[in-house]
Image 1: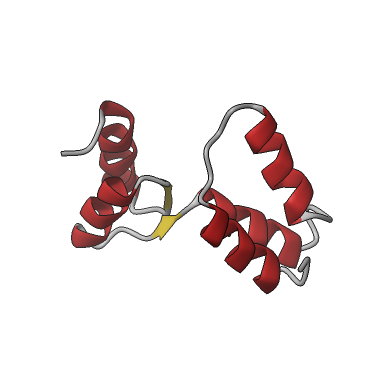
Image 2: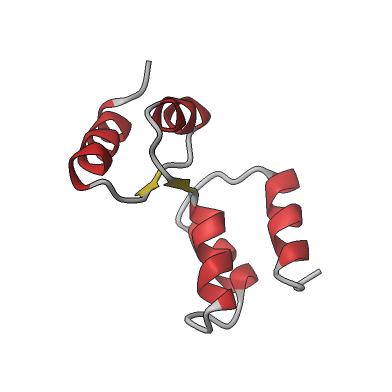
Length: 86
């Protein structure tokens, strides 16, 4: 079962036929089962760097963590490696 916020994001994605931003595994699975295109926060940061919108994925991640957002260390390392920041 997904939480209320994820359910609303999924409903909006279906209504608009657009990408949705979901980080929680259950929500991502549910959205993909409904053939929605899903992006996570770290993937969004990576794409923003690739497009020149942000200079540093590390800086974006640090700001999220400072605000109390939990991110998996393994996932962080993978994204920073892909962003050529490791």
